[in-house]
Length: 198
Image (cartoon, rainbow, N blue to C red; front, side):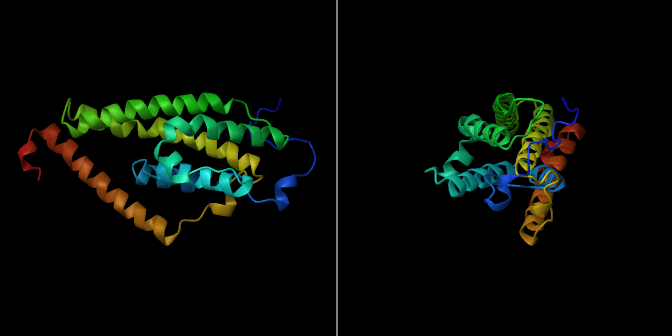
C-alpha cells in the first residue's frame, strides 16, 4: 500500500472531470486560516457548503442550513458520503472517515462544555484557554476530512478554491477582533485585574 494516503490510484482517469463536485473543494491553507481566524465559526459554513454541494449533485432532499447548525448529528452521514465518493473514485485513504466523524462529535461536545464554563466565568481563565486550545484538534480533524475530499474530487491541493476573497478577509478581521478581546480577558484574569474589563 502506498505510504501517501492521498496518492492517486492507478485505476484509470477520473470520471468526475465532467461532473459537478459532490463536495466542497477548499485549499488547505485557506481552510486553516478561515477556521482559526474565525474561532471555528467557519465550521458552520463548511458543513453548509458540503451539504449544499451534495444536494445539488445528487438531487437529495436535504436542508443544508439545518444540517450545518446541527452538525454533530449529521457529521457521520456526511462523512459516509465522502467515504463512498472516495471508494467509487477508485482511490484510497489510510483511515476510515467514520472515525474522524466520531472524533469531531467528541471534540465539539467538549468544546461546548468549556465554552459554557468560560461564558459563566467558571474556572477562568483556564476554561477560556482550554476552549480556545480545543480549536487545534478540531481544525486538524476537519482539515483531514478536507484533504480526503480534495483527493476524491481530483484536486489534491484544493487549487480550485485556494484564494481568499474580500468576504473572507472581512470575516478574518472580525475574527481577529474577537481573538483580541478574548486575549485581553485572559490577560486580565491572569493579572488579577478583572474589574478593568468592560
